[in-house]
Amino acid sequence: VSAVQRAADAFAAGEPVLVHDAADREGEVDLIYPARSVGPAAVARMRNDAGGLICVALSHEVAETFDLPFLADEIDHPAAEADHLGYDERSSFSLTVNHRDTYTGVTDEDRSTTITALGHAAADPEHTDFADEFRAPGHVHVLRAAPELLDEREGHTELGIALADAAGREPAVVVCEMLDDETGEALSVDDARAYAERHGFAYVEGRDLVAELA
Ligand code: 5RP
Ligand code: CA
Ligand code: ZN
Image (cartoon, rainbow, N blue to C red):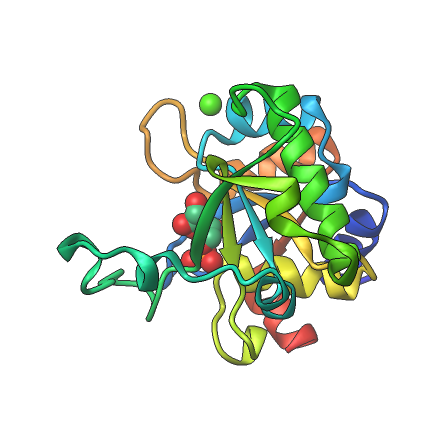
């Protein structure tokens, strides 16, 4: 079984997968879950073991249905004028949101409520009134995948949505960067692989996802 198939099987079962984008891109490993499978314990794992920003990536089609913009296009401030990333053409950030049933929005319970609701919304976008269910700003970053997915961009946003497609899951995935507690830098590939091994999680290289799924 290929690493991609193992990752898709794990994802189909609601388990997390570790995905390295590329050494010549961000050079980061994200911990990625199907949004609907994220309970409070998974949020705790992301902030304690991963440590990066907790974001929900949505497919282009779902983001369009919900009229979710790219944040950089919406901010009327000089800081948003040129989105110079260094490693990609554009950032995939859209709005930040909280589910309207949350209180502060940041607790493990609140963030898992927002994240799973985004998963349900993505599974049935036509029957979702986005603004009725979510408010912005909030504590979960929404990311928008590129329209042509991996043919257009090879970020964790697109890698995660491609993995969801391959697993037959709705196009909504949580991503969070694995950081190194000692150095504060991105966790190395070796350490991320060891973490995956320790916890029985699948690990996959972005280039393998691109080769098999694009
Ligand atoms: C949000 C990010 C992460 O890198 C995340 O992986 C999404 O970005 P990209 O699609 O560019 O990899 O910046 O925390
Ligand atoms: Ca940590
Ligand atoms: Zn990334």
